[in-house]
Image (cartoon, rainbow, N blue to C red):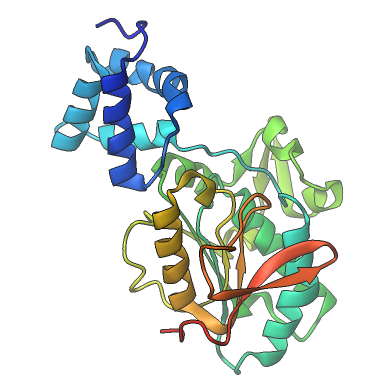
Amino acid sequence: MSPAEEISDMEFNGVREFLQKNCSITLAESKKYLVQTRLEGLLREFKISSYLELIKRAKAGGDNGLLERIIDKMTTNETLWFRDRYPFEILRELILPGLAAGKESGKKIRIWSAASSTGQEPYSIAMTIREFCEANSGVPPGGFEILATDISQTALGNARAGSYDRLEISRGMPDPLLKKYFNEKNGLWEIREEIKRMVRFNQFNLQKPFAGQGTFDVIFCRNVMIYFSPDFKKELMRKFAEILAPDGFFVIGVSESVLGISGDFNPIIHKGGVVYKKSPKGFAAK
């Protein structure tokens, strides 16, 4: 078939099953056009005649990086700085003071950005921590560890570079922090090393076991669970609860909720925003 032709129902269902199996993304029936517009370029690039053949070759693994390229195309890396504001205000005003006061000497406060995309979220967390430490001289920035993960190697490559164009930097970045934490050169803004070195980026598929990740004091998993099936959301929240410290916090997106999915978290409301704290009846941290 020509890549310009409309994707058939059989092909669409094949792509849906592939994405469900490999990254737990659930596509609605209305997303046929989205699949075609995002993947038809790969058909041309790899000289493949159909979407089913594309999936078949990705499964076979003979084409270098094809599976990853498909996932890259179909995962949405929509992000901005300090998205929705309130999670970072709650982090600075409520979460960090409590964690800093209660942490044992010599132990780092660990934060996981579990769908970090091109880096705006974990770097926003790092800047929030830096501002908190400046306002609280007894708390060193070195007492924090930020792990940022994403399924997309392309997004992670951009995140590690920490360099953003005018449009990317304009999406939510306050001017005082832009001046303080970025260097501008040839129309690009590169985040400064004191922020960059606070974040460690790794590729990670949330379908995989969490063993080896360690225990976290705060987990951000924002605006990604909306793409998952109800069953996978339940499994994911169970796994998050298992590795969250007993007094840990769980931060999700505005349009996401734990209601009816997990009983392991209690809502904490602060200045009109909601984050979740691990329930005393929840899982014990491993």
